[in-house]
Image (cartoon, rainbow, N blue to C red; front, side, top):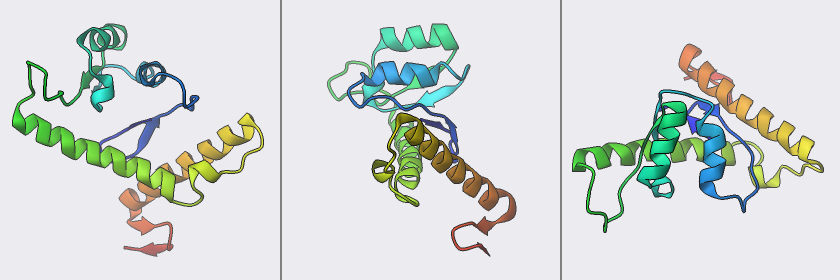
Length: 143
């Protein structure tokens, strides 16, 4: 899933758990173009990042491993850490608001897709209503 810095889901895909993380990411990353994408260490690799950039124009920013010769500036790593915390918060909201994603009880793949789409649409609407009208949809009160 790709989100904005404010945590609004932009693009997502459902893939089998045993699929390589990079293959799954390519399906999502290539649906946007000319973006700065902040990711985790699973997306390290100059060659892979260069191929993504060539195909989509997207720039991937990752923390570096401690044993890498070329390191990010400390200030950039701190920024990256804050951005990653926002991303994790968005995942937390999807996972822990309403019915847990792992317990959607869908009987078919189509049913699973439908439930995930509804859950992400609900999250997006809740964020947008909060931002535009300062309404907390969970309690239906103005903040």
